Image (cartoon, rainbow, N blue to C red; front, side, top):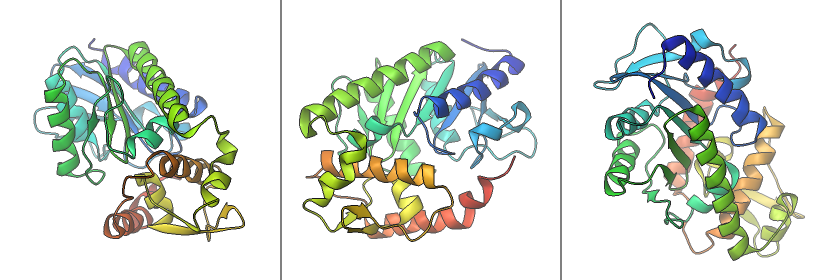
Length: 276
């Protein structure tokens, strides 16, 4: 589907609110886009909160060369969206989320049922873009993808189609998680992990951005020195614990990759998140 620009802007804003409400996203993590022509799409800006985002904040990007209209700064993952629109002409709406169970399961870096997993690359890098495009090219019939240690990417013909696929992917990943780890309530993940560990390393990118490489576990709780958003921190700590429980035989992020992401977050994205 190709949307007219005003409709695309309205739907992307609506999608951001819906992702927050359904807990498929936390704060500014993830991004959303809608196709407005054969060579253009509208995408969410970098580091902005979905709750305060307005249609005029969205950025128009050209698929061919990633050039933009105006002064807006598009999501750092614009290249992934451009690659998807280029490889899938039928695609009209894209949601990239860090949804809970998909993020936990993708920490292992393996395909889940019919959903392929793209190999790891640091967020916003050409390596990640290349890995995702190669995964899409290999799996021409797939429209939902896991991104190793990062999240999920869903390609929809329309707004409704994309959301339906994101919810189905979350259900699939939750079933896979429960089959391996057990039906542990979310508020029990830290306690379960703390039974055999004294620290929690970064298995997913969002945790690395908020915490760094590792945090101590003391009396069954992950000790975080400070946080500017307790709700987001709580969700991401639980999600990283779930990832560590699921992918217990996989390696966490390297110290270098984790600390690099933490540094970039402190210097860049934490300053952008509060803008309205």
